[in-house]
Image (cartoon, rainbow, N blue to C red):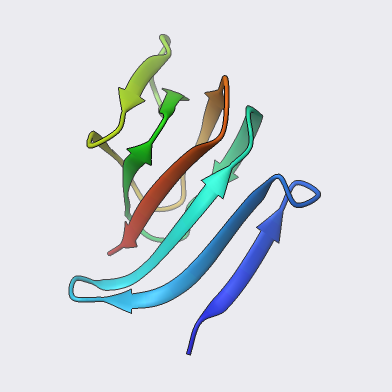
Length: 93
């Protein structure tokens, strides 16, 4: 069944499920700045809004819009910031 997760005092909410590609979460982040850590390789696709990301090992922020995907390797930290509510799909490998 589904599992719901809340982070950052409810400003980030996700629902875990099993997709055709494996474990995944679909979620929404309220506008703001957040830092996440990975325990597996993650494929993050923005489904609405825009997410500006500081990927591990990078020195410049990059913005991803709806339909765009970025990848974060296992055991890494990354930062995201949004101007407004943004939804995403994350598939774990």
